[in-house]
Image 1: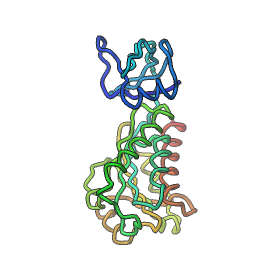
Image 2 (image 1 turned 90 degrees about the horizontal axis):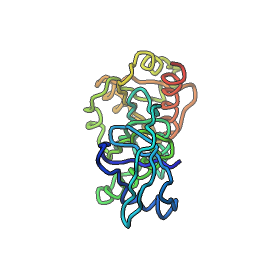
Image 3 (image 1 turned 90 degrees about the vertical axis):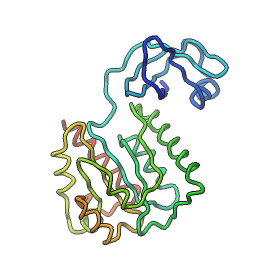
Length: 248
């Protein structure tokens, strides 16, 4: 069953309307009719099976059939910060990271980022990222669409406030470090937040690592193998899901 996000809170006496691109998807792509059912997710993460009551020239009106009671979200808020990589690797991180439960994505300009951010193309690029994340959230039956920001500097990144802050560092992996990620996942509590920073293809510079460590970030290895920049965030999200959802 298709899932659509409603950018509003549910109010009992107000109509539930889908317009814009989602309207087009329902009517033109899925070719749905009145009485067909879809999932609707509201701004406060409440979700329900709904029935299509009417289809007008620019809106689909829904009615509630049954509220969902199961949760689809990770018990903690995970933000993935990625040094700008080449090609479409960032889009892969956004798509698969959304499926794995990330709450937010923050790209940043790293010392070794080959790709340079073009402010002239900024809005178009961020719009595309938001569309990728929204579609991935619908596909994976999330209750929220993760936030995606335009790239920031590392100095802006370290100003963000989180309960826990980690940085994946390949030198720690080579040295056999395997405790910091486990320690954080053992101590973090439901509703708390964690920021995990990943470098671009060339990794983070020693200067960046020192800056992050001075700001309270814990460096961590991700097992004995060196992971690609697009693989490492997915490893961490999978580890979080295993520890906090499957093991508890």
